[in-house]
Length: 312
Length: 223
Image (cartoon, rainbow over all chains, first blue to last red; front, side, top):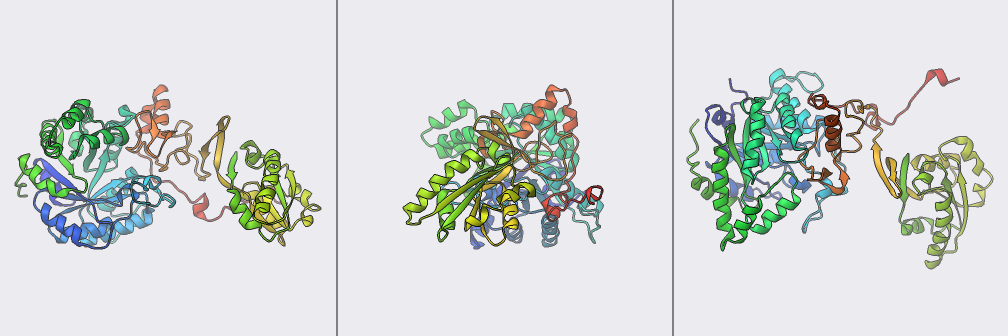
């Protein structure tokens, strides 16, 4: 039985290899940027993640961004973080988002605001965070609103809000042995699908997924492997050193560094990663990110043999 | 203990312009332990403040006094004779002490000389680490004696976020331990990891400041 009836849910339930991509809302009120991306990316994926002020930098809200994408024919996966809203605001936004047509929601704790000043941006490192609930508690809230028609308080809502509930997973962050148990908690709380932190070491990822499979988690939730399109050896080195939970094999960095066209090499690596993820038993799809260069995605998805997307 | 740190001197100078005689009041309890507002710090600040004021062309006489505790009325009362000799008070106590002085001497300008930051322990000389958030709903029994409200940057209840660094440090500060990493290590060492698997429900924050300013009443102690 369908829980929310979103396209993503249908693709997964049909046993098709799912594909989601990430679309960052603009740092401004102009919808054109987002609509241009929607036009470029339409029909190449089963869901389009709309981030919620990622890295704690102010952007157009994920709900508004998701609505723009929806109207442009791209089914959004609205992201919601616990950093900026308490349970009152979160639930209120969920009701509103559902009324606007959103059917997928990814629940995450959110990047801490102290790290929001980066590059040329000042960010808001002096702001007050909320963290009234954490990502796992947010998942339970969505599940209760959908399956029991009640708010976290226990108060009934007039109409349940069936969302297809997503969660993040960083299998290679320390303490690594606990990460699969944290995945278990997310599944117990109600996560229908999982999008992982960027994976570059597919062997290591395969063994993490094997642990999940051994616990029966790969059947209870749909694991989508997160893949970031690498642009350069420097980017890979940076992520390996600075992004917690991202492990880039030395050989991959070397391969990239020795390429005469790193951009093209990055596309080839991405296609290979997608294919490797596809071969891991228990992996139900991939989640692609091409940070600030989404226009490269259609070519990559085509090259990976994932087009056209299945009819569901 | 309650920990605090000195405010920048220019901020104090700005506040004290126009005053002639300032009384710096220390507190020999928490803020003395964290080397922000004890007798030693009071006597160190006094000449610094005088010189800083002088540099800006203001002649300020600085009086000093350190109380045993600024958060108890009987000790605050010890200022009754000295305070009228000044036209401003700079308290180096935590916010509780500053307010006690302002309440006892409502006709005077009372300025905080420190910023109160947290409830912490002195881990080693010169290093204090937050330990308690006074959240009003203590769950230390579930987290193996580590507070995930005060010691996790996101106050998470159900385990570490994806931001744990390789060495078990927090993504926001490479010198800060990820408390959930520590909780897991201790649970693991004690063979009780299964206790961390249960999904913990949203917390009740209403017994802390989120339920309005605390007003604790013990009828048995009221006469």
